[in-house]
Image 1 (cartoon, rainbow over the protein chains, first blue to last red):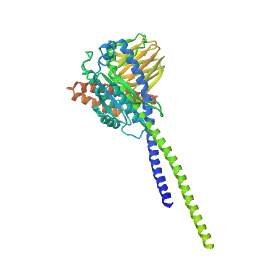
Image 2: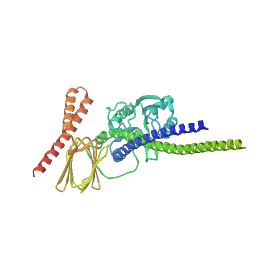
Image 3: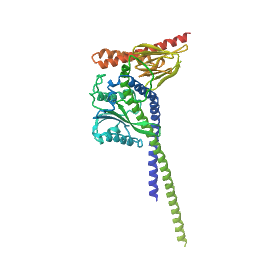
Image 4: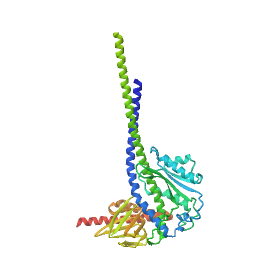
Length: 302
Length: 143
């Protein structure tokens, strides 16, 4: 009996230690989460307005010539898709609940539906790089994930690779878009919905897809629609990648915080359970000793 | 009155109503008053002046796009934007010098040169705005 109560005591102690660690991680994740969420939410207006503007421009300017939009438009005669680039944005670390698993599954779904051998991938974050290696994908670049202070500079290299791979040589402005290696570029990331919900998502960033809705305001363009579009389009691609990185980081920290809170609660439950068992065991041993003593006493008197 | 919105990738810098807004665009400086024609233009590095009544606000921006919407709204999407009081004069001066140096060294590489020239433009605009802000502040103390 004595040994089992000592075992229980030891377990309680180790569970308490774990609870301390998860508590600390929860607090750290909560702080990072608040920052990341604020950053994500404050950059959303730019995302909405700039994409609305590109949509608007695409309808008016000579977009057929623009190398970043050109290829989707001849809808009746789709271009055969040969090579696809996928940018997979994951955290560096685990312990974030089902976030990573869901994300990798989503990415795998995409890879499978489009034909896995056609993909080249860029990974951001170690988890994605590991998964890509496991799946034997062709990794053309692997970046580390930044978990705070993300700036648009972090998205630049990825955007450059994507644009260059897509159009071949970007300086061939207005020329034909046949030089590109990739027919499509996707980003797989976790969309931040709220602290409790994060959704793995696939975003097609290239070619840009103009929407069909028509808004017939007459605009004046200075110097001209093509020039404005040229200045804007590269930026929009860059910004789209930046935004997905922000979303991914906000999701990561939110998921981790929730996972750690759950771990904390589970630890508390476990400690309660174990304390109860411990007290029962202790009481049982006392009762047993007492009954042994009184039994011995009875035997001696008799 | 025009509803003015200045947005950068990091944040919504400013959102308010103004009487007139002066912006640097690719084709020159323009001033937008209410009932302006819908317009889309490229923004270049420089200063935006915002007039409301007798008050004037100045801030530095770098490249971007402006959109005047039909219902008296003006949206500016800029890469960076700073108020005069936000600019650290010393550091802006250093950044300007660095850009200038880079420009002189990199005349062979077209892309680096263009980047350096753009950043020089940007820091010049920041310095201008910061100095303006400083001198105005001093004038206020004297009066």
